[in-house]
Length: 299
Image 1 (cartoon, rainbow, N blue to C red):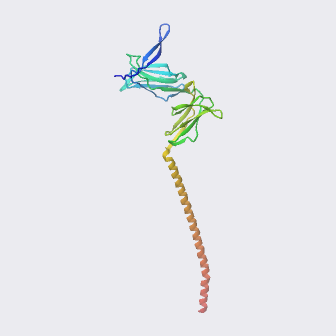
Image 2 (image 1 turned 60 degrees about the horizontal axis):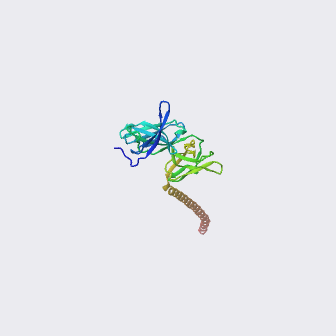
Image 3 (image 1 turned 180 degrees about the vertical axis):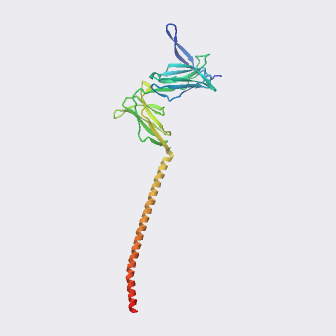
C-alpha cells in the first residue's frame, strides 16, 4: 500500500502541446505527496565543467512506473524530463543523463515518482541536488597561510584570490563543494579575496576554489590549481610527543657533557699523578745514590 502524506501540496507545471498549426501552452496542477519521496543522487561530483556530462539517478523502494526530473531556477520550475522506470528487486530507478552541459543546465534538480494510471499524482519531492557549471570565467588562485601540512584535528586557513571582481568565492574538496560561499573583499593590493577557516581537519585531499557572480550563483569560474593538504598524526599526541622529544634530546646532551667533563677530569688527574710520580722518582734517585756512596766509604 503506498505511503500517503498528511500534507498534499500542489505544483503548477506548464506543458506545451503541439496542435495542428500551433502550440498550446496549458497549465497542469499536480498533486504532490501522494507517495513517499524517492532518492536523487549525482553519479559524478555536482561540479560539472562546461561541455561535460552528468548523470542523476532517481530511485525508490516503491515500484513507480514513471520518474520525472525537474530543474529549478530562482524557485520556479524551468524544465522537466520524464522517463519510464526500470524495476529491480526491491524497488525502481532511472538514470537521467544531462549534457554536454551549457550554462542553461545549471540549477537545482529534484525528482518525483508516479504511476501511469494517475500521471498527475506525484510523490513527495526528493531532496534537491545543486548542479554548478564550472569553467565560465578565469580561474582564481588558492593558497595556505602556512605549510599545507596539518596535524589531524587542527584548524587550517585557505585563501582564495583573483584579479576579477567576483562577488563570491567557493571552496571544494575532491570535487565536492564545502559549506557556503564567502563574499569577496578587495585587498590593499587591488585583488579580491577571502579566507576559508576550516576547523578540525581530519582528511587529506585536494582543495580548489572558484569565483562566481551574485546574479548567476550556479555558474562558477574555472577551478583554481589544486592544493593538496596533507594530514598527519593526531593532535592529542602531537604536543606531548614534541615535548618528550625535546626532553630526550636535552637529557642526551647533558649525559654527553657530563661524560666529557668526567673524561677530561680523569685525563688531567692521570697526567698530574704521573708528573708527581716522575718528580718523586727524580728526587729519590740522588738520595739513594748518595746513600750507596756513604755505605761504600764506611765499608
